[in-house]
Length: 84
Image (tube, rainbow, N blue to C red; front, side, top):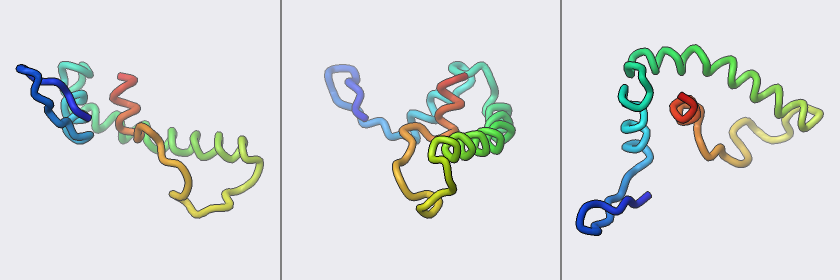
């Protein structure tokens, strides 16, 4: 992703830098330690719910190996930060 900086210079912002900036206390209202704990608490229930939702939509077990198929635009950590 490129951002137009001062003087019209393009600045490349990596996904890592964007996540680091958006997970700052100013944006989330939580310390990074508490945000990490929140993500840890929510990850397992969300993954189980997502797997069940996909199973219901398909109507049967997976035919492909785990991890195959389309990738999420936002990984779980980014979803929590965006929701927060």
